[in-house]
Structures are given as structure tokens and as C-alpha cells.
Length: 446
Image (cartoon, rainbow, N blue to C red):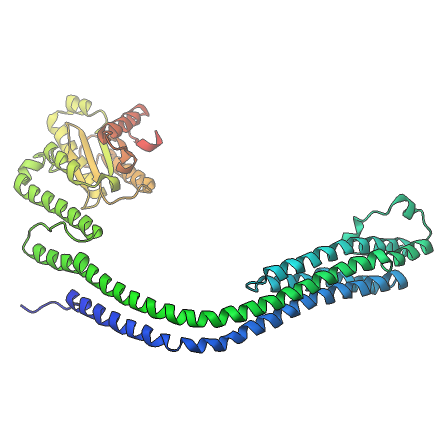
């Protein structure tokens, strides 16, 4: 017999071994090129230049703000005020300097010094804000940045004349206290640059040492990885490939699969064997007459009991149908008509459910439908099916009396282990009867 097309698992196994050997050879070859990594040490110098630039920018930004506020307090021209706040809140050179410093690995000490400079710069801005507010008040400016609107002058300063306010503003940004604060910022900057120099030296030394260490470590890891790959190939072969090949042969022979190999494969083997047992049991214990109702053709109680043990209820909807006023039909129209109504109901159920679903007659006028492989999010679909079934049963064009069904619905996943799913569905159907019949109830919504 000609073999069907496909990739052989034995070939995959062989390719995996060959591929792992090639991969290990390539990795070993790559280690000899690791010495070229010293060229990348220049990145350390480039980083240092970048961080120095970031540190210098903060000082330049601080000096720029000082220049603008001093000119504004002396000359009172609003353009200097605009330049000041454009730098402080739009250009954000100081904040950008902090951000650039933050991305430099190992620059934490320099960054902390830079942040200290930033803190002192912000404190200095409070003094500058007050000086600018004096000028604004002296010149009676109405249009000025919102942040200055929250600055309140003291009663004494408010009472000063315009000229006095201007002199006081100029003094606040030119006196010893102001320049003392500026000196603190410069000291923080010098400390930041010193920390950068130390960081660069440490990085250069560490980088050179790490190159040699990495070479030795990589060669050791190559050996370990080679052994690991070979072990994994052997392990996957023993736990995965060989059990699969053996299982294929067993399936061809129509026999159970040995539960050996990896956990995942054992799970599949158990699932297959369970289905195999159900299948064999079905062949041995079920035939049509033994499992189906003679009148309606639906599964009988024996078939229902077998389905209860073989259907995966965690992914199944179970629906209990009860004919409304069926006793009245038998009493007024006769049992023959009642039988025809039962046959009609089964036909309607079969028409509205899939061929994969199961319809069972478990009592005189009680029927169960197993709606298999169904998620819990199908309430609307089931509701439409029940409405269609009741519409068909209400049609008297076939000469049969109109009737209806009350339905209880439950999904197997909502029933806790040890609980009876039939009790839940019977409770739901009873609630449907109480609700006026010709209706339905889902157990989870009770």
C-alpha cells in the first residue's frame, strides 16, 4: 500500500539531532569572534560625553534663567519674562538633562548630584518668581504667566511704590543670598561631573575584564549547552516521539494506547482510551432497539443513562422538555392522538437541534436534549430554539391539537461536583411551569 504524504516523525527526530549539532558548532565558532567586542568599548566614552553634555545643559539652563530674570527686574521689559518661562516650561532643558542622565547605566551617583542641583534651581526659582511678581505689580502688567498669579506679595511689599518694588526685585536676584544659592547649584554640578569621571574609569576597567571573563564563560556554556541539547533530544525522543509512533500502530490495530511518555501524552492516551472504552461499550451494549424509544425514535431511558456517563457535561447544555397539559390531550382526544403529539414533538426537536445533539425520552411526556460542545454564552440561541419549537407545536394545520412545552435549561459547567445535574434541570423546568408554562428557565438565573 502506498504511504500517505506527510513528514515522518523519525525524520523530524533525525533532523533535530543534526540541527542541534550544527547549532552548537555555530555557537562555538561565534565565541572566537567575541574578542571583537572590545571595539564597542568606545560606547563608554560616547556615553560619558553624552552625560557630560546633559550635566552642562542643566547649568546653562540655570544661568539662562538667571540672566532673563535679572534683566527683567532691571529693565522691566516683558520679553525677558516670556523668554524665562519659555525655557522653564516649554524648552525644559533642565528636565531633559535629568532624563538623559537617567538612561545612563551606572550614572546614579552623578544623577543624584544633578537632581540636587535641580532642587536648588527650583528653590531659586521661588525667589525669582517673587521678584518677577514685584516687577509685574510695579508695571501693572495684566497679561503674565498663570504660575505667577498664585504668588502673593507681603503686605509690606504690596504697600511699596512702583520704584521701590523695582529696586527690591532687582536686589532679590543680585544680592549675596541669591548668588549663594547659585553657588550651591554649581557645587552640585561639579560633584556630578566628578562622579561621571569616576564612573567612566570604572566602566573602562570593568569592560576590559569582562571581555576575557565572557570568553571563558561562553566556552564553558557551549559545552553545557551541547550536553543539554543532546539530553533534550534524547528525552523528547523517549517521552514524545516514540510513544506517538507506538500509539499510531496501536490505533491501526484498533487497540488501546499504552499510557507512557510525557504527562501531556499520557493525558491524551487516557482521553483516547476513555473514548475507546465508551465506543467498545456502545458496540457491545447498545443497539437501536435497546437504546431508542419505539414510538418516537428518540433515545430511551437506557440510552439516556449511557449518554449521562459518556457525554462531557462541562461543555454541554442539558434541556428538560415537559409537554403542557398532555394529560388533557389524552383525556379529550385519546391516547392515539397523544402518541402523535409525542412523535411530532420529537420531530420538532430534531429539526431544531443539530445532528450531533441527542434527544431522549425519559418519561411519558418528558424529554431531555443534550446540546453538546456548547459554551455557556448561548442563552439567546437556546431561547430562539425554544420559541420556534413552541410555535411549531401551536400549529394545528396537521390536525393535531395545539400544545406547548415548558423547559428547564442548565449548562453542565455550573453544576458542582457531586451535585445532580438532573435535579438542577428539573428545578428549572418546575420554575418554568410556575411561570405560566410555555416558557423556559435557565438554572443559573434562578
